[in-house]
Length: 327
Image 1 (cartoon, helix red, strand yellow):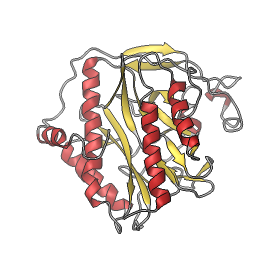
Image 2 (cartoon, helix red, strand yellow; image 1 turned 45 degrees about the horizontal axis):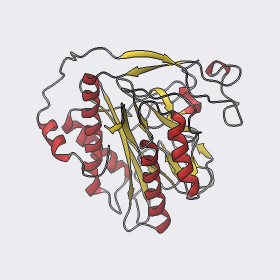
Image 3 (cartoon, helix red, strand yellow; image 1 turned 90 degrees about the vertical axis):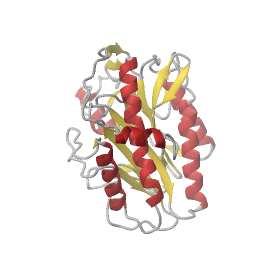
């Protein structure tokens, strides 16, 4: 689930290719034997200087306690994961990916997003995991009412499952976040094209997938968050797509949304320097039209303002000494 720059992340300052790792997941599901005590070393907490997010047209309405007077986010504390914790996160990531593998054969014309949600809940029960989305309630928001987010066509993110059947030509993002029985979060999302699809829909889904990987390829110790953002933004805009700016990737571990925030736009060389052991999501939301979006009355669903198609892919990424690893 994408973090929101405006609604709660700023206030608190003041994997997965289809079909991958199926046999491993099946083995893990069969061998779940209840909670295992964690014996590894505790995560290191490190205070760092964040990427600058300067006040402008989009954040001028933020409460003052959510930013300093000049619009720069105060320092954040980032969790550097130990090898033992990284292994726990790898398992969580594979469980999340397995949920998407499980529903893939079922996503066809006529299925509803509520049925997709039911299938995801079924697989989580088989795994022994829980949904991080169900009941999730950031400050000032109503609890999220479903197991996963299902965002159809012009829905950017956080779409709530319903009983409307999907039809040929639709595109839908399914965003899955699980919590393992020992408390680790695994988060990923995938686009699905319903039926043969339209040329525009297939193009957007493919280019968004490629944009995500452009960002992932920048990840290594010593690179910056700006490197990730510029790679995604440059690729998107070179293909006449726009980058949604109000929502972003995020750190993750034993909390759903940790620091740092991963913006999908930026300038190379700017922002926080990455360090080995950081884990975060890269989850660009790209629109076929303009970048502007709005939130619906349900308090969750975000749609494109011009009703153009929107797509999103998400992976959970570990920073390593010489590159990265998709969890």
